[in-house]
Image (spheres, helix red, strand yellow):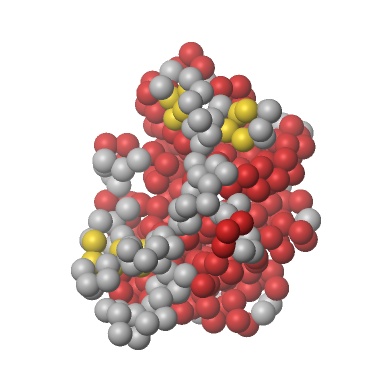
Length: 343
């Protein structure tokens, strides 16, 4: 069996790297290599996992049921990234509206408004981090297409994330966004809160509404205060008893880096940039051999994608080289796990 998520994330960075680092210089040899790999990966994703009859993806190959919304959101994101490529991404751009429309199959109508369930057609499990990935993807889609309806949708998806904020002052380290809408699980997580901060600041930069910036700052500060470590990394979550799970997953570090960079862009407060640089240094030291770190390739790919946000504003470190190194290793080693003949 092969997982759609594993295939998507092998290509996710390739799609990003396929775009020239600077428009003026044009594509380099490495850009063109990344473009070829991105196109091959996308074609494989569409061939082996996409289900045209339902406009969705199968979770595994051979087909055995619909993908959950988390891998679907990453397939959507991959489509957006590939669609950025002039000419080469034309097919992905044409398919983008249908991919966004496909999110409706995950809509949890029992809860009202726009909120997405983990399961295709389900009304059972609403994870706030799933909705965060979708909101971020819709913001990217809006940036790409200049279609205001996608930004409106991103704002609507953000509402349940806002509603997931812990407002009980009696909780240990009150605040933060819950992981799941549940009466049993009250974990507040970095993946929900740091990505919530990132969404907030991006929505501020698009709308100039101070509310979003205030929300982003609050979520960012909570992540540092309640989940921060002395090295500058963030821990995974805090439970209802106040116990912190200290696992420092890479994609949580990526969310903090991207949030810090965009808070710096929005406010010009260099403390945010310094935070992002500190987290990046600590994370790269932790990930000297990323594919042997015990982390899923999907988490790693998201981290390196977010690292490119820092590379765009800080050229003093060669962050892009770290991203390219990981993407090349993932292309070689992860394809062995999914079947080299198919990608």
